[in-house]
Length: 161
Image (cartoon, rainbow, N blue to C red; front, side):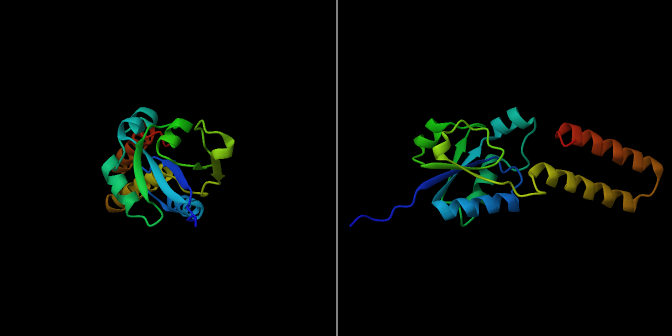
């Protein structure tokens, strides 16, 4: 009697700030099979996004491994191809509809992204909260100007504009 073997499903992500959009994608992937997260290395995040992630690779990996939908986490480059998927014995790649990986269509499952959330948007919200907290405690025009200058500089640095 042959066992009913679930497919191995790869989900590639940077997960620099893990949020509910990531969880939703991982949940959908787990409905298909055993989930292997291809987690972008710190070096590739720096090279492609232009900054060092808030959480380093090992921290992001530890969080992902604690999520019940994730069975395994492997380091990956920014873009993956079919050879990378095969190297990790995966049958499919699951990705949001912004996929740019070179994967044959028959091995690709695309889900819509969660509206209104991304790591970039979370960074903006954190910055806005920090500025609001500072401005509420210091109500003078000099601090307002400094806060606005800082937020604009940080947004440019993290490419949030």
